[in-house]
Structure formats: structure tokens, C-alpha cells
Amino acid sequence: MDPGDEPLPPIHPSMGRRIFLRGAAAGTAVIALGGGTYVIASEEEEKKARGMKRVDGRARLPPDQYLLRALRDMGGEPGSASLAGYRLKVHGEVEAPFEIDFSELLRMPQTEQTCDVHCVTKWTVLDARFTGVRLTDLAARAKPKPSARHVIFEAAHGYTANVPLADAMKPNVLVAHRLGGNALPRANGAPVRALVPDLYFWKSAKWLTGIRFVAQDRPGYWETRGYHNHADPWREERYG
Ligand SMILES: Nc1nc2c(c(=O)[nH]1)N[C@H]1C(S)=C(S)[C@@H](COP(=O)(O)O)O[C@H]1N2
Ligand SMILES: [Mo]
Image (tube, rainbow, N blue to C red; front, side, top):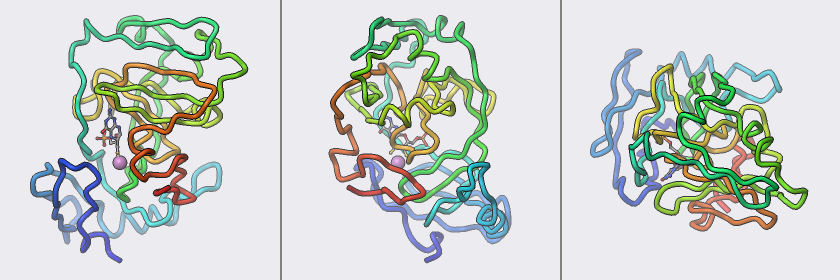
């Protein structure tokens, strides 16, 4: 089915019904009633994307995804916008739990990467440019115990997302604070969000407050509401 004919399933209760159109001409802005503006890629761009492969051989566009030109604000309940008050807690099954503020996070080694993101509501954005600190670098400082098997991303207002340790320790997993060379917009999780590009985007907790290493898995916000526990876009692990 042409995604341009099908309203997205509203996955956040606040979203309500959305309507959008695919523009005939490249660059046509698309209006989502009650949900802001976003841009669907042209047919040609999408066709090109369907022919592309990642360096690991997987398709750039995972099964049943369509292309947007930029991240779409998917809502959620924002945390505090205060940079001065920001704290990130790294804790749980670790030898050396710690808490850092925003300036300390900026003093850690910074990684800038372009990566693709895939939302379970079927949009994909290619080559989003994020800047942040690798989760492996935060883990190296906290020293997870051998008993740690999962990472729980903790966010404002109790949102959590669980990721197996092996997925969380990939080098493209970041604690990100910049997008496209600018400070991360508040809607996209400022001051700091998790970024797990190779799992559906709900695992990338916005308004991140904590990283908790745990021995026992703890399904998070969406995982306890019918979404898949793992969320691999190439296996279409959408629903549990
Ligand atoms: N704290 C928090 N993080 C969250 C969410 C949320 O509701 N709260 N929604 C998730 C979902 S379902 C998606 S698709 C992405 C959307 O990120 P974006 O709004 O930057 O596109 O954020 C994820 N992170
Ligand atoms: Mo999502």
C-alpha cells in the first residue's frame, strides 16, 4: 500500500487522527493536521533508497518503511529544558556509578555520526547527523559488572526503554545532544537523548535522565504496551 494513502496509526494517545498527502513535486511540505509539518520524500528518492545497502549488507530501507526527509516530532512528555540543572545518572549493576552534568558530558570524547533512524510507525530518515558521547565510553567509566545483561534508558516522567547489553554496546549507540549540527531541539529530546539507530526509534529515549545497567530485563514504556521487546527493524519486530 502507498503510505501516502494511509494515515499513520496514532501510537501516542495525544496524537489523534493524522492526515497527510504525498506531494507530487519533490520538496512539497506536507501538513499533518494537529501534528505539525513533515516532509515525505519523493517517489524517486524512495526508489533510490530501496536500492541502497548498508556496509553490513542490510537494506537502507528496512521492510515496509517509507522515507521522510527529516525527523518527525513524535511527541511524548518533555523533561526540563534547563541545561544548568541537567544530570545524567549512570547506575545499576556497575562497579562505579556516577552522575554527570551537561558540561561534564561535553568534556567527554564527542562522536559525530550520520545514521538512519526507523520509527515503528513506518517512517525512516536517512543520514540524520547526531553528536554525542558513545554509550561504551560512559560504560567504561561505570564498569558494568559481569551480571549486567541489559541497559534501561530512563527518561523524564518515568519513560523507559530496555535494550540488551550487546545492542547497547554497539559503537553507533550515543547519548546525543546535537542534531544536524545544532543543539538538539526540545521536541527531539533536549538536552540529551539516547540514540540506538539500529532498533526502532522508540528505544531512543528522549529527555534522558539515566542509564541503568540491570541483570534482569525490564520491559519499558512501549514494551509493556504491546510493542516488541527487542525492536529490530530488519526483522520487523514491531509488536510483541
Ligand atoms: N522520553 C520519551 N522518549 C521517547 C518517546 C517518548 O514518548 N518519551 N517516544 C519514542 C518514540 S515512539 C519515538 S518514534 C521517538 C521519536 O523521536 P522524535 O520525536 O525525535 O522523532 O522517540 C522515542 N523516545
Ligand atoms: Mo515511535
